[in-house]
Length: 508
Image 1 (tube, rainbow, N blue to C red):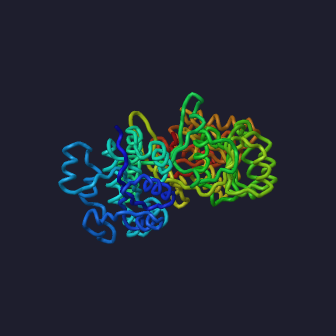
Image 2 (image 1 turned 45 degrees about the vertical axis):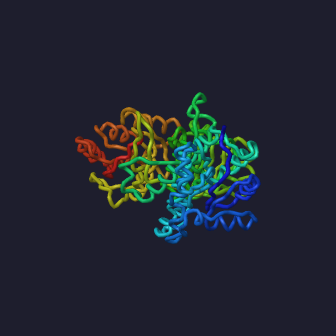
Image 3 (image 1 turned 90 degrees about the vertical axis):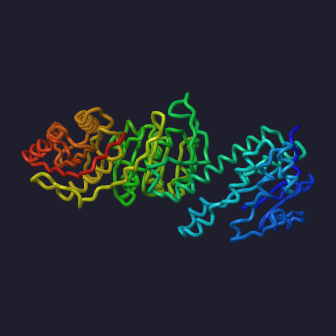
């Protein structure tokens, strides 16, 4: 027969929602053991409790660091309800404890609110997590409640079975307890290790998840673990899909490069920007970004680093898009944008760029530093006789930022803070170059005086030769090929400038 709850230990940080539980337990005649603030709360409800100190014979000591860590507490929780263990409980006058309701100090919340290490360390729970683990281990005889989110579940059980519990329920709650305790320990580890040890051990834990409509394709299931609200507020639209999130992440990473620029618009398709432009207004930036590839823009992800006004919203509304991301919207613009309920509109709160990135592959996970390096002109080295003009240098920097966020191999052609065309994801650099030129021609761009950026070095001078015939005047690349001199010599022979950055930006 399943056991009936006759005694409970309750010691919680969060008291909200607890009243209904303790009133029900009191009504069932359950003996309640408790501590400190929880005792005051329950007694304030007019319910009698027993202090843990009367059980242990010791007061709370060391400023509350030690109060439940005692055999008379843990013996009552961990005893198997069989003759040998029960006899020992009788011998040492230890009452069995059938229900443990304990939550944990708010460690993660404290880390997010302060940098004071002493305050953070004090929120590392010792007694609480020990009680939770002990009760969860002995789930065959003990019920463990490790979070206020489980109060409703417990209350249903108490009402349904009048104080008795089923093994399946106890096992389920024990599983959740170990999930909570492992998450808690992971958060502490990552705080203490910081960046120094995180490459030696891969530990990540996220409790908050939500199912997505489907994965990359309808036959694949998918879930998101994390908190989107830290990055953006969803104003309207259908639920975000797997592909929406992957593209939104790429869009935000890209726009972080331009957060201090003039109003900049980017159009993302399958994580690749197909249009980017910086202008004096969001309206102009939108039109210039769209010019680069109006065909690929269909069904894309749109992102802007400036407020969207009504005139810009009207223009955006002329095409079909999946997601629009911006720091804010004027009221009239927002009224227009939300009129199409399936379109997703996100208000960007912060870029929240993480220092580390990871993904699963083979039978494990790879972790790396995210590519957050933005080159400075101080580290540029002009390798040619001809020097880039101030305007060319501005465009080279712009093109380099675009190039960094396109799949390799990639080539970007840009002019006047506008990406004219790109070739990306190609198996050879010359193919990427040809593709970029073809795209520029397709949409009527004049390449004379434009610049070219490459995500990696030129193994041969063929790309430089090809763009020279199109009127490209300046090139930026990492350098590092054993045949760099061939590209440099070609530029010198044709009055082109070439800048080396020393930094490669492969993106796979």
